[in-house]
Image 1 (tube, rainbow, N blue to C red):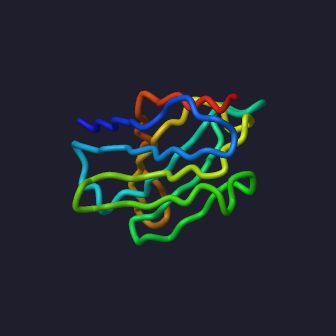
Image 2 (tube, rainbow, N blue to C red):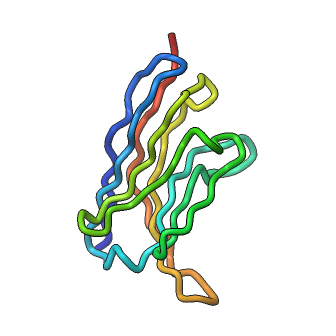
Length: 120
């Protein structure tokens, strides 16, 4: 059974930083693509940042240069370092894991979410 447990959210002032962590269990972590998502207007969730099993990364334009994503396969954990936070970044952040089979992806697996609030 796949389990994704997020941590690291909280209340921070504009310009501050947070680091989100997502610990995975029940999967062979190293072969899964991992990502962070948040709700967006008109969408169920939007991609914030993602990292493939091979270590390639991509992110939304709105967080480019501010939110690097990384993974530690030895710890089965993916991280989202959130810098220069803005009030617009306030959201629940969800961890996602899916297996990349090459021509298709496996099922989406989601964590329970962690709240990030940026406010003075």
